[in-house]
Length: 165
Image (cartoon, rainbow, N blue to C red):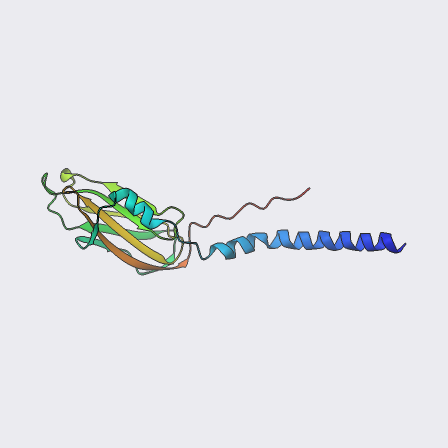
């Protein structure tokens, strides 16, 4: 009689513990993802620039330093350029260090754009540095960076919790 009751106790206890863990799993996954790890932003920048030096200046990244909701963050980038056929902005790239993918958005421009200005809304995974890099027609790269504080993070992906049979 002792052996079956011990087995029954262990089986019931194990089932209860497994059920409690499965119920807590989504919260645990979300808690672990709140501090999103750094992605490989320097490698992504190197891929775009081909290893060329990036100089600070000529680019103005306008993004609020504090946002309540990381799902819709307004952002604009302007570049000091005459936008002539001899001297114009070829592309503007925006990089983030904590989003799942470091290259958030890229815009390709030409001299017929009239002015080097782009605006959009992006998702931000967490508090992080955001960098805008402009590629000019002479082959040079210019940048600006902003430290952004996000109170409600976006870009969080929860892992699915499967029920055991």
